[in-house]
Image (cartoon, rainbow, N blue to C red):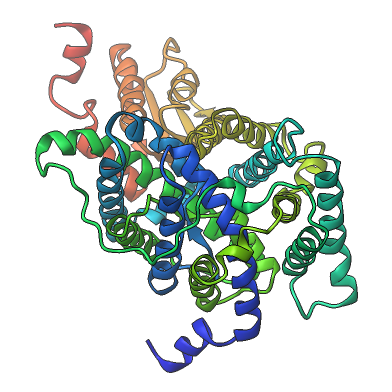
Length: 497
């Protein structure tokens, strides 16, 4: 890597990156613990994963400034594996997840992101914003010990600091000020509020190399492969979508295939050091960007500061009130949600709005990002196919002497528009010759070729001569390869002889 690129990727924003890394590290701790609990493993598993993944992805990832760690979407997929087979199989599954993601990166699967429409992207962002907000509600449940009116007051005070401080100064990220001020108040006044230490024990040592203690046989592979494949797909999907969002926030570009390979390497390292599989985090990535993080240094700083906080400042970290972190995450959910999409419901086409709404509803209902994005992409594809099918137009003109008719086809002929194409021809007209002009048409698939076969053979069955003109090279290639109407005996086979 040239020195100029190295400097730009690492050292062009040192102060902003280091401060942003501190904010992200503080916000990572309760989330990593919470995700570990969801997966059914010790909090250390999620914290070690967040440390290892952040550290590795800073060097191997394709999107500078993006934060990757243990995530809720991945944790939900681990529950059954951990419940029935235990932690060792989870570590083995994490290793295999990394290998699969690396292979995906080598195969350049990130290129499929071009098929994700803007409406699906907006739905993905809005769904994540909603999930981030909903994830904070348990910390506001008055039935929990330490949750009371003081908690609500601190959350309100935290939001006040976060939104008003930037109007006075932007020298220090307002989320960091919020966490420090509310922690000082809670400690000095000995307030009865829920704190980070209430979530579980924090690590007191660095992670150590830990090869999963599972049998190396096909039975183990049969157990972990379905989980690993699901984790690889969901993790890669969330990472690539998050990368696109950060691209837009920072007006920069990223390398999706390098990100896929980087995520794979990071998960392999996490699995070897006692961590669970992870991926990019939209919430933490937005915190990083909003706090001034831009380069790989911010991602590295988040991982290093996370472990320093746990090992050196553990007693202080335990004193951070959850209300402070809830305020930060509420800020993230508000900032992540595309409020313009609400106004655009009355402006955008109904099909576009429906794709966005279905994506949001599916993700929020299932808590599965892959299902939501898949539903959105499928619906968008159906709407697109329907729209393209309506564009096809067939006109005809009778020759002066009435001996022949020329049909002019304009548009795309494929599986959706094939029936429309066939119905445009009058097979009962008593005429000697039919000319089909395809100069402005394109044939895409086997169904389209089959439709052309039907048209030609039906005319020939009525004794009408058929001439095809103007077919472009791409259409001619598929027609010559798959068509039957120009093959010997085609009409006889149609007539059943």
